[in-house]
Image (cartoon, rainbow, N blue to C red):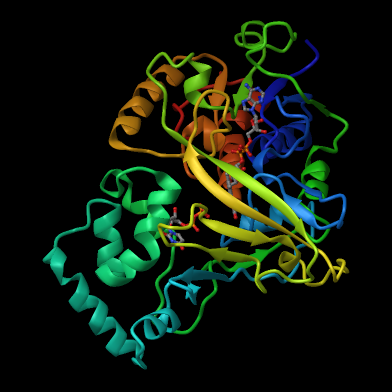
Length: 395
Ligand code: FAD
Ligand code: UDP
């Protein structure tokens, strides 16, 4: 086989590993992907009727505070000055998200100062009696109190996760900042923006290297294609970024994933909602949010009489559904520990990325983790011939 490394999955994790091994160690890398395009879930394409860039697997906003990751991604694309802001439509009224002083004052019909608002939330969180929050609900109530939790979080989360929030990890809600100012930026990171000429141009530039070959519509578990698991493992080092439970034939049980259904529409109006993302936190609306893609790129010359919107619905992944988000209940975490043990004894295979490590990774985290895998595992292998050592699936 004419490759020094096989990377399964052309998402940002796989692309980063491949690009680094080709560039830094002069190695020949073959990337395979079962889909018909590269880029994993960050892939986007222009909607044909309007030319508006649509993120195929849900809206993707790039943000990071990691200097190395920022410098690295800027080798492949420039970023616009886009700053993400989200609004939420509750009981026929629109509020700013994430929860900030504007949301609090609008909700309570008040004009609290930061200190007054803090005191109010502290009082409302007193039901926890100073106890360390142990799950999603307790963490939510401790951060914003019960009334705001019920209005903006409880039903949205029920729709999005379809899991008892007491079984969800507190980390999920900790992704959202709570601010006692009127700052309604969605992210806290130092750097933020969208790729100037789109995600796909960026992702293709990462793979554009003499020593990288990409094979699409190629499934690692399809024994009729030559780069399948049985042929490759043990012969050529592998970085696997597909689902870890699938790799081991679900021997330790299926890990719970959430998938999304997207309903896309081209509408004959110039502007549908006046903002890129509107959340719907009420129980009587079946979708969680609506994206309107033109607003991600106000600098582009898009048609003024048409727009593209996408409603997002969430449900458990079954069968061939795309696994998008790890549900990560306590039972899932037990299963993951068993898979990590199995991964440690899988010689010559490293597990990475969101699916390979069963972790809720943002793009910058996937890229950062891939750079660390290259530094900590693959550099030693390709420069001094060290054996490929998996530290498990928690790279
Ligand atoms: P993926 O992008 O999932 O790539 C894995 C690849 O492996 C896929 O292309 C898949 O086809 C391939 N594969 C799987 N199994 C096989 C197989 N058997 N054989 C061959 N190929 C296989 N991050 C942000 O920073 N900002 C956001 O706003 C954001 N929004 C998101 C919204 C949604 C709906 C989702 C799902 C994710 C979002 N993310 C966001 C996260 C971002 O998509 C991930 O961080 C990034 O995609 C991780 O890259 P990856 O390479 O680990 O995985
Ligand atoms: N969330 C919510 N209401 C909102 C936005 C978010 O309840 O209006 C909760 C929900 O549980 C979600 C989590 O906060 O899973 C993290 O939100 P984020 O926007 O980071 O989710 P993602 O980008 O992954 O969809």
